[in-house]
Length: 208
Image (cartoon, rainbow, N blue to C red; front, top):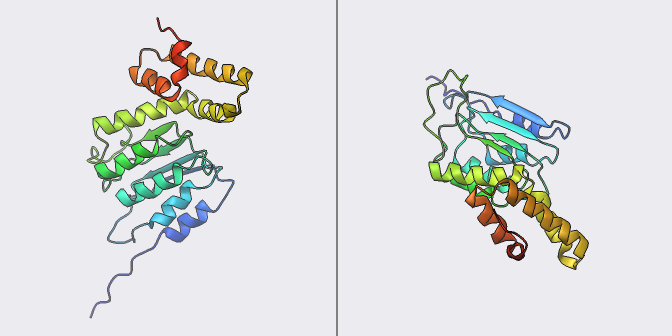
């Protein structure tokens, strides 16, 4: 009788890449055939995200699914363990709305990620993707990514450090939030977030 085909495991290779602390950028477009390779484990995907020096991670056509998105979200929501600013997950057709929503929710707590690519690039020779976030989910992603690019993490950290009551530093922090308001005063989502995070600013700001 014909022997069953033995599937190839890619995890050891990716775990080896994840273990290189000086590797700040990883770009993979594996185009994995699920009939020939095993599913990447959640632990492997999570390990790729958890290296503090990792700045850029691209995982295209890696057969990622919702559980992989949950693993990525768990790794990136802890700002102490990540400084990643760009994540690209295009061409992973097994990611459903639940997976994309998990990533959007993660961005509420992640302050380093500035770019999250979810669609196939224009240069892709594949057909148009069938997996991408809903309009509402993508808008939520873009909202927090925009705040991160504007320096939300530094401002929130300064707020935390000012809890002891240094008036000078507190005024500097207020100035940073006010500058963000002035820059993006046409974006009501940004205005709402800033005032929700810093209610005392209401007495300092007059938007015109």
